Image (cartoon, rainbow over all chains, first blue to last red; front, side, top):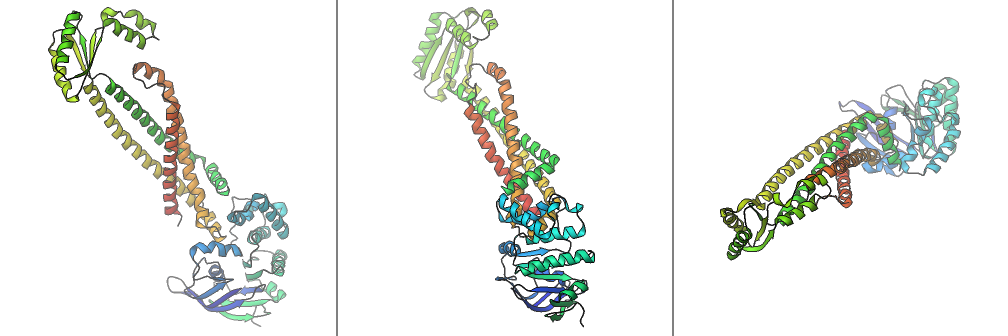
Length: 227
Length: 288
């Protein structure tokens, strides 16, 4: 499903952000991407959705060669990848419903079908009663759920979540992770970047650890720490 | 449909910018309409004078029938005359009465005695007009000679000057309108930078982002064209009775409705072109 081979990314000053990254993710896998702040987790997500290009290496996502992907094909790629951004990127002047329906509007779906789909996803993430509220009226956990709902609305093959439990209390964090596990159980490949050690340790899923832009560990049933 | 909804939302959420853009477009198309009316009117006036006898000679009151016939014979003998028509005082009064039939006050004041009889003359060759005019002027029974060629050439030069001023004004206002729409849409794009970024990250194509802005530019221009057309047409209809009496005898009024509709059609096409150009420029400039 996802293949990275010798991927490096340097910024214009020449400073490396990612160096020689190689790994494969199979369809339906659940992967934790762990590492300290600045280790390159978010950059890796940006590469996967072709927000940026690698300096070296090849990236294959599904059938697409990300490096050689023509610009006009980028929207197609992004519709196949659901992403929860670290800063959520919810539009504050739109209601939760309007935020969630946004990716559907890009596909030109009929209003009636879009309404049904949004209702279904709102129910799935448990914020159906907040559909007409604005993001500022929701708690941190509810906003996360709204961002997850928006990422799920196009039934993506791959789901990327960039620190979706940051700033959340342990109970809400667990609820968010349970939601991601549910998504994964339906066959969606999930990659979750996190600092939350207890969640990683409890779930015992594959862990890819990054440090200073390099993979320092890739374990099938890993823990947050190296031990 | 989704693009139209987004466009309408953009317009509704910034009413002052939208009003400014529509007003400048209204002004531009008001000027376009006014000059279209002037062009139509002036070409009708020129056609009218061109179709009239090329020289009109008015006789003094003391001119007798034999003097008139002698002059007519003299002119015919030159072989340069295509047509010559005598208009008696009574015929002149009849023409006057026909032209002023809706104004009884003017009819009461004028009798056949105060109107001059005249000869309406046209020549075979336009070049012979001057020599014929000179011959007529030499007659002691002639009070005044009106040379239509002078009227036409004077009108033509005025019309050409108006046309040039009109084209210059329309060009300047079109340019100002384009700049204002580029600025308004540029501000909108800057305000929506974050939203556009999010949409792009979620899979929006460049054209999906561009369309609402292009449609917004077209909306401003078409709304301005429609308003400019309504205002100018209303003013023209309002002043028509006055102009009609001022230009009595010249067949301009009533202006056919088809002309107004053709003008509206032409202005809407021009508006779409202006709207597309300006919004596309804004999109290229601000949406990289």
